[in-house]
Image (cartoon, rainbow, N blue to C red; front, top):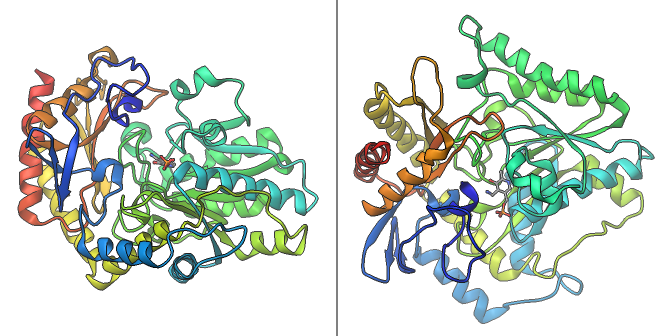
Length: 451
Ligand code: PMP
C-alpha cells in the first residue's frame, strides 16, 4: 500500500503491515536523475521521489543558493522578522499565480499547507458571519495529507479508518475519472457535466448555506495515478461553487509547480481558485517547504475583520527553505524547463502508449506533462482490477528497484480506486534517452511483477 511506499523502510520506522517494504540499502548520494545506494548501485529517479525532485539531484545553482543563505541568515523566527528570501519567494509566487490570488502564506510542506488552507476557509466564513458554513466536500479518490485535518479531507477510507472520529466531517463525491466512470457512448462534455453535477447534488443535499468549501486536486496524484479532468469539468465546478458561495480550494501539492507543463495545473482548466496549496516541487526536495496561495477576497475578509490569522508553525517561512525554493523556481524559468516538461512529457506519453498500448494488462495510459501513469487491469475489456491481495503495485516497484528504476506505484482496490497504477514523474531536466531507458526498464518490471 502506498503508505509503505512513502516509508523509508529503515529499522527506525514503525512496524509496517506490508511484505513489500523497501529493501534497498540506504541512499548515500545523488546527482541529476541518479540516486546511489551504499552498495554502489544506481537507480534512475523516474518519479522525483514522490513528484518532488523537479530539478533532479545536486543542482549546482540550488546548492550555491543554499550555501549563500546559510552563510548570511539561516533562521529568523517569523514572530519577529520576515526575511528577504521569504519576501522574494512570496512575491514571486503571487506574481506567477492564477488571477485573483494576491497573497502567499509560506509553510513547511503539503499537509501543513492544506491545514492552513482549511483554517483560512473557516476563518473567512466566520469573519463574514457565516458560521453555519462548515461542511467540506472533497472527492473519493484524493489525498490531501496525513495530519488530522488533511486526513479528514482526503478520500481514502483505509487511511482514515483508524483515526475516527476525524476532526471534520468531510463529504466525498466521485472524482472526474474518465477511464473508470465515463460511459461508453457518453461524450466528454456530457461526462464532464455529469461528474461536476455530483457537486451540485451534494451541495443541495447538505444545504447550500452550510457548505464551506470544495477541495480537489486538478490532476489526481497519489491515489489514482495522474488522472486529468475531462472537458470543462473544472469550469463547471467553479460555476457551481461561485453560485453557492462555496470556496474552491485546489490542492496542487503534487500536480503543481510545473509538473503538468504549466506552472499551475489549474491554468489548463481556465479557472482561478480561492485557495491553492503547493509544496513538493516548490522546493524540489532541497528543503521542506509549502505554500498556500490565497485570493484577495479571503485576505481582505480576514484583514478587515479580526485582522489576525491564528496559525503558525515554528519553521514556516524558513529562509533556507525559501532560498532553495527561489533558486529552484529561478532555474526552471531561466532554463525554460516547462517547455522541456511539455516536450518530454509528450515523448514519455508516446513511449508509454507504444509500449503498453496493447499490453494485455494495461488498461489506461494517462496524465499531463511529466506526470504520467499506467493503470494495470486483470482484463482490458472488463477493466477488472487485479486481486488487491496480490499487491501488484508493490511487486512492480520491487522489480523496478531491482532493475535500478524508481517509480511511484499505488494500488489495491481502495474506495473505488480499483486497481494498481504506476506513476512516473521524472525531473524536468529529463532527456529523450533517459525516458527511453525508463520505459524499457518499466516494461521489464511490469512483466516481472505480473510474473
Ligand atoms: N496534497 C497532495 C495532493 C499530495 O500529493 C500530498 C503528498 N503526497 C499532500 C497533500 C501532503 O503533502 P506532505 O506529504 O508534504 O505533507
